[in-house]
Amino acid sequence: MIPLVCIVGQTATGKTSFALQLSEVIPSEIVSADSRQVYKKMTVGTGKDIPTDFSFTENSVLSYFQNKKTKLWMLDLVQPDEDWSASQFVKTADTILLGINSRQRLPIVVGGTGMYVESLLNPPASLSIPKDDELRESLSFMNVDELQQHLLHLDRKRFEQMNRDDQMNPRRLVRAIEVAQWGPSAQKTSEKYHTMIIGFRTSPEKLEQKIRQRVLERLNFGMLEEVQSLLKEYGREGFFRFPSFSATGYRETLALLENEISKEECLERWTKREVAYAKRQMTWFKKRPNITWIDLDSFTPNEQGKLVNRLKTWYSAHI
Image (cartoon, rainbow, N blue to C red):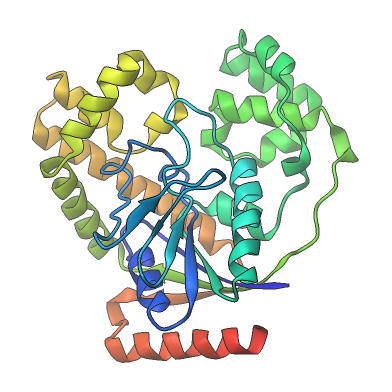
């Protein structure tokens, strides 16, 4: 199996920063597991924060960012009006991780989209079920209540296992119906990775402070211009049509630009959504076993050095 380090946790906890530090001492490449940073033209709002010494390499197969030490994968892959899913993430990530391993470098998956990480490490049978355009067209005329009833009729257990947000999300319901129609015929794939999972966390109070400060910086340095550019290209309708724009901050900034809310209200709404998202992230990861949690409140340089040495030892044992 391929050795793989995953760095997970809530937004604004320094996951990518630590991965970049790790790449300074271990030959490695970083793969983003973020469901929004995959979109082009959405840089400020999604917090890509790519260091200035990285350059973009356009590749006929997959593009990436690179400096002298490492590569950053799975950023800026698709346009905001294009589809992207956990299934596409897993298929693409599998290819990238295989390539990294073949170059005798450690793959490091970094991100807070729990479903992506979980699907990569424990691929559900549903990943093998293809999109059914004809079915999706027929379901497009149904409202949420009708989709719920349709899924309940097909597979009540599947519906009851969905969280409340997904039960109210037409896209999630359509995909669940798509999967349910296959019944038990789809098969899970075997495990491919020998994994060490590191989780970063901090106190709710400190996390909210970090989130608020980061949101304010984005509003002051580029978010307004980014949303104006996207609005010009995709129109107001696009902000409510394409899933990419459901990323926190974009619709709030649109409301600010349209003078529906003040900058202060935009800051409050965006921060509130980001904090709620961070809580959902933690709820997801808490249910996952085998995560070594790092409390950032006590993560001293000495403790950081110990963690790096532990990862180096682990990788050496699994090459």
